[in-house]
Image (cartoon, rainbow, N blue to C red; front, side):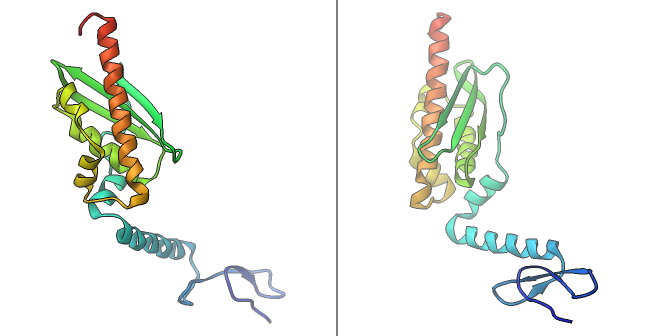
Length: 176
């Protein structure tokens, strides 16, 4: 009876019975796909912790304000140069932003930036919200790698477009 080692399914000759054997970098074998996936996930998490701050990972994995508002007072959707799309909806009452939601099809840092910026704008006036800069988001996240800074720029650009949408709707209705 011969057996091959490596990644995949090995079959013992003559029996037709399959046995999963997966080799990792360290040479440990798994007979259970769930164990293998758990180790891969843990390796990814270790690598993420080397690249991103704990706050960025928290916002990426547990974002706040995800979704859409029905009948938003201001809304915008922008696709950044990397291909990530961010959409922001705003609800404004009494001159202040009372609610904000976002949707993103992007990477973890894009999601984290969407979460942070929608928290930042709540309670602010339109003028105060226009003053938010990408550096403000980066400061709250405790930093971003250079290759992810564009995510904070996308969040600010999308917010500003939603604020402009709010202003244009109010002008059309004669309220500004």
